[in-house]
Length: 110
Length: 115
Image 1 (cartoon, each protein chain N blue to C red):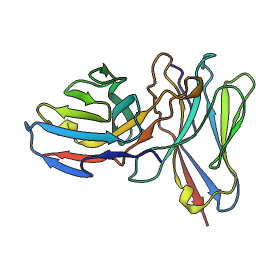
Image 2: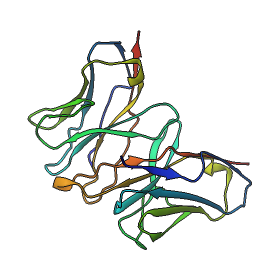
Image 3: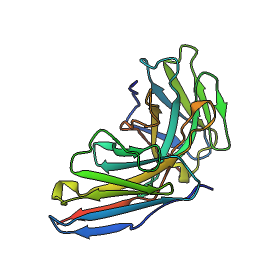
Image 4: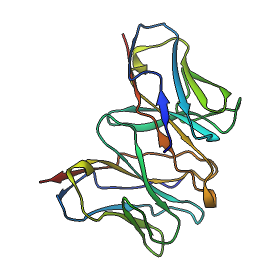
């Protein structure tokens, strides 16, 4: 299963876009990139996923590079409630299981 | 909305006790998962199940067993609880989505303390 690398922490000003990077250089062609977040003392929450194309939903946008070796999660207008640990995950090849790394702690500041 | 519920938010048990953690999902999902989360170690998969009466070991199954008698319910069992099983336990469920996607939906977690 492909591993991911994320910065341990990032800050973002409230109202600005938060851009969270992720490297997954060993990803294979049929593996999806998933993003989850975990707000303190809660279970992880699904945000978005993608395979090759960029994706957007009501929460965020996902930009995947053409070679698929990295991606960026974009929260277009971060709020204080977006403060959380964000996990970039590549889905297990033959199963539905997710392998969580350490994630990026995003602190949104007023 | 998908709802995954866990039987307890907080649980305190003694060493050697048998512990049952229950998880129920209301979206007819085929797949269910049990994770534990520890500081510095992130989420680690204990067991998962793709169907009723079916189970597969995750990355850290030692000391645990599971039961899935009904599609909506997945139980995690600690046969003889030990202090190193003090942790946050998270249950998740998913269906097989379009294009093979597997979005997982998590419950709120059970914080288990073994004394």
